[in-house]
Length: 224
Image (cartoon, rainbow, N blue to C red; front, side):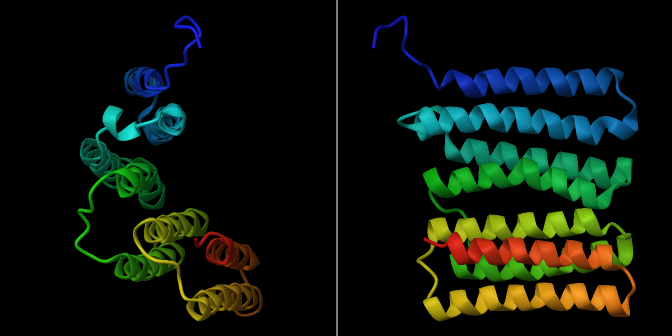
């Protein structure tokens, strides 16, 4: 390919940074305080969309985006956005979602291209994520009263850990994989029945059950 027609995927993250910074700065300067978190979320999606393109098309992503630096920036950004959402915006479940969007992609990028810095093993990480996801779901539904975002947060936590386990660990034994799929399917059915017939809130039942189905589908077709 000629020099004129050569693609430069390494420039895509830079384009994403410029666009994301522009959106975030515009929101910070001109948008009402209550809309800042959604604007920051849009900025993150722009940044990660262009960055993902650069990573996929680059022959050596780690040479352009050092995994340790990406992880550090991602964790810092997640902490800042999550803290802002909790303390200033008063939107705990949505703040957690934005923090996850900020922190999960850098963590999974680091898992693929960097040296492990996680003191926990892949299996323990998944187990912890299952517990954390369940806790987020309970807190969001019972205490915060935001079942939709709680279900979405829980799904992101568990799927991120499951993908991390796929990257860093070995394939799940068939029996364990079957048990996880069966447990999520059974939990989804029980959630729908409980919230519809006992709690009188079928919408929450569908949200909780749907989140469990998504997790079950990942374990059924995503393990490799």
